[in-house]
Length: 298
Ligand SMILES: [Zn+2]
Image 1: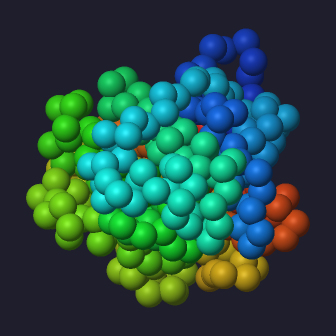
Image 2: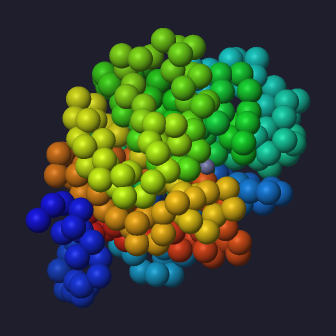
């Protein structure tokens, strides 16, 4: 039985026995990473909604407080002038405004990703950063609801101070992680990062994508850690998506967690995009990702 089919089986058939102590999923969440909702994208306020839902559903999660990213962390992945202007509300953020609420949240969203990655790297296994808004952020410009690239902030911080040599980014959002690619090129990071962005690298064909995915995950074997963007916008009903139905998205997540767990490859994962309305439909997708994570690791 493959790791992913075993997980799918457990997601649907295994009753929870509360008498057995089980590992729990660390979720790096602080209220400071939540901003006021912004038009056109729920991502600024989504971390709180997702965490609340996971608690209500009784998933075995432990909330841990992340550290905010320091300015020096942000300067590694972005032009210093751009970072300062965004944080001082002089430059447009990824939502196309100068919201002080968004600016205040930004060190915490990247910090959630970095803290989750550090947690997974230090202890092995998995950690979750319930945050979004990274992969379209370029070296010196925001785009597509993304302001700072928490993926590359994390990669560069781990290489600078945590002894990591090579970090993987498996970006399974619907869209091309063009900002990530821009920063990899600017920082000449090709040896230090393996970046797979499904929005560019794989056809939007469910069966072919899912058949390729175990091999894709195994191709990260030479990495110290994999960052996994479990985007909800590949959903077939997403207005900015999509080609995967509920079962196929669950299979995607089961494959990623199952293969990584079997390889002993630490994983830090985040939410990325999702634009269905009402928001509960997006939360349903994130629920199933957490369920796959629990099935693989708990
Ligand atoms: Zn997207």
